[in-house]
Amino acid sequence: PKGAQISHYNLSRLFQSAGGYFDFQGSDTWSLLHSFAFDFSVWEIFGSLTFGCSLVLVPYDVRQDVNEVRKLCVQFSHTPAPELYFNN
Image (cartoon, rainbow, N blue to C red):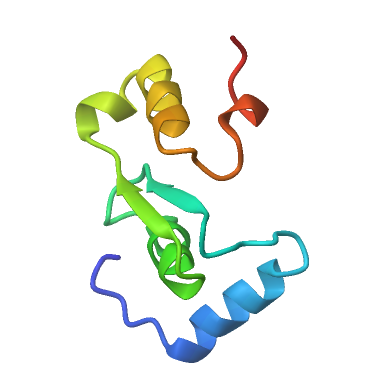
């Protein structure tokens, strides 16, 4: 993001530290909901790559409507389950 150089060490440390909180598997699906220029995209992009997961690039118009985001998460069996974030 923003043309910043990110070392392998920093990425490794980020995801090793998160390992105690999450149990990511290669069968998981992540979504890129933030701009490529936003720092949080490091978590979304490199997290999916690190754990061998699928990454869904969410279109701008979908990101603008929470109901559409929910539908997309259900469609792709997003990890963690959309039921944790969305009420019916």
